Amino acid sequence: MSEGPRAADRPDPGLFGPGSVTWQAHADPVMWIAGVRALYLQALHPRAVRGVMQNSDFRRDAWGRLLRTASFVGTLTYGTTGAAERAGARVRRIHSLLGATDPATGERYGVGEPALLLWVHCAEVDSYLSVLRRSGFPVSDAQADRYIDENRESARLVGLDPAQVPADRAALAAYFASVRPGLAATADSREVDAFLRRPPVSAVLTPAREVIWRQVAGLAYAALPPYAHELYGRRAPEPETVTRRLTATGNALRCIPARLRWQLPPRHILKAMDRLGPGSRPAPCGLRTPDAILDGPREAKLHDGGDSTRWRTPG
Image (tube, rainbow, N blue to C red; front, side):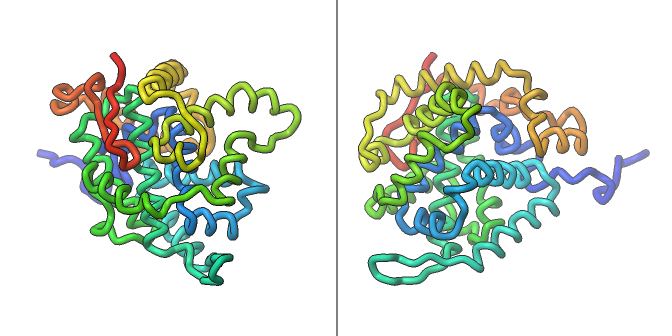
């Protein structure tokens, strides 16, 4: 009797595979809003944002930077193991070459410092998870912990020791509580904020920026934890109002056929489905495990940005 294909002959599922929370969650269209929220949050760490502003072409090629970040996340999530490892090696190599200078003290430091990498990682994971759950994506508490734990693999690829990275919601909340005293809205932070609110575009795209991008950036900003609003100095709607807006936006975006959304280059998800077969198609129903049924989307709660506020998706 055949025992099925040998392991060496099976297609490579990559770092996570279709059975992971990450595989199902990262295909959702609200990830774009979550990514912008992550940028807002990351910019509140003075050393981290200084490293970005002193070393990148953010001002001239911000759109390219956003797309490269999205492609990196897509490669880690849906690419082969080899592709993910190579992407991580490129990031580590770049970080090893770059440094930043504190203008107040003259201190020179590397942008690949573990503390800075950890901040960027935690801000991303928190933003992805928070926006997904508040938008109605069915992630239970247990699955939220799994998601955080799974993404310690992403942290490893950028140079962190996974043992030093939060592995569940409680550890992530404790991490944010520990770093909050050092966060601030600096001149660099405000430059990122100004860009995200009104990014430079060609004249022909200005109407789209005013109609579409302002809504995306505004909702991403509103989804930040309250302490971030205080630091930036701009009020946001009440949390319940933001959650309703995220839910409505998520429902609207999910009406766009997935295969149409996934056609955007570099087509990570479609390539993964071609490699692994139709059963690998990401979808919210892929998370309908017993714990998700018992702790369904209408009861989804989480710590948000290390804040003690807990959100409930409106029913």
